[in-house]
Amino acid sequence: EAGVAQSPRYKIIEKRQSVAFWCNPISGHATLYWYQQILGQGPKLLIQFQNNGVVDDSQLPKDRFSAERLKGVDSTLKIQPAKLEDSAVYLCASSLILGETQYFGPGTRLLVL
Amino acid sequence: KQEVTQIPAALSVPEGENLVLNCSFTDSAIYNLQWFRQDPGKGLTSLLLIQSSQREQTSGRLNASLDKSSGRSTLYIAASQPGDSATYLCATRRDNFNKFYFGSGTKLNVKP
Image (cartoon, rainbow over all chains, first blue to last red; front, side, top):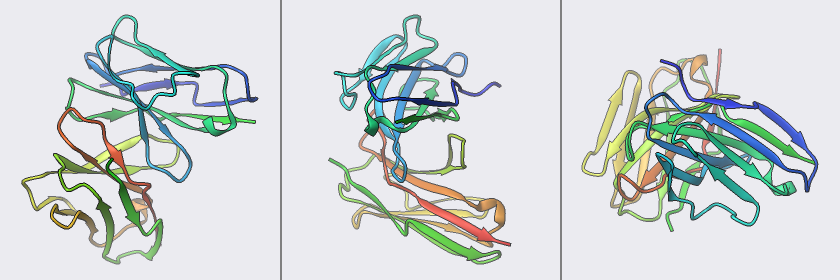
């Protein structure tokens, strides 16, 4: 069974630029999560989808971050414009249904200069 | 808001040693607590999940305990091996649909 796929694996941008990350969850998984993990900290949930609907986006900085899961399968997370403090690893996870075991992708490491 | 703390932040031990990783949380009204392993450049892998009604869970050389009243959990690793080197994270949930609250992790290095 293929795991959660994420791309790109690494990205370096300058502040005020835009960036987008892509996630393809495990086939059949209805729930998709985006986490931000700053160096030395645990992951923090940014947004959680159930199919193509948002369940929780309370910790998403909506002035600069956006995410979508239009067809209830893969998802994109966008930052526009990026700030230095956005440097982090962005992890995507999926689960069969809400509340079930989450399977994590390898993450996208973002460096904002 | 739940605060999860893991001490120490880093730990280096010789191979074969038994060790304990600590996790504490401020809100005892948890649904479950989960221990994860994170390898460099990789995502998180679930190791053990303890429901709030349980006291401990075991998997191979790993044993996790939970004391809700004191807001503490420990992960015991027996006979450590170099392959155990990774960052270990604990996370709690208030209910089965609530978000995870993660600690900042303990980076373990097991020396051959």
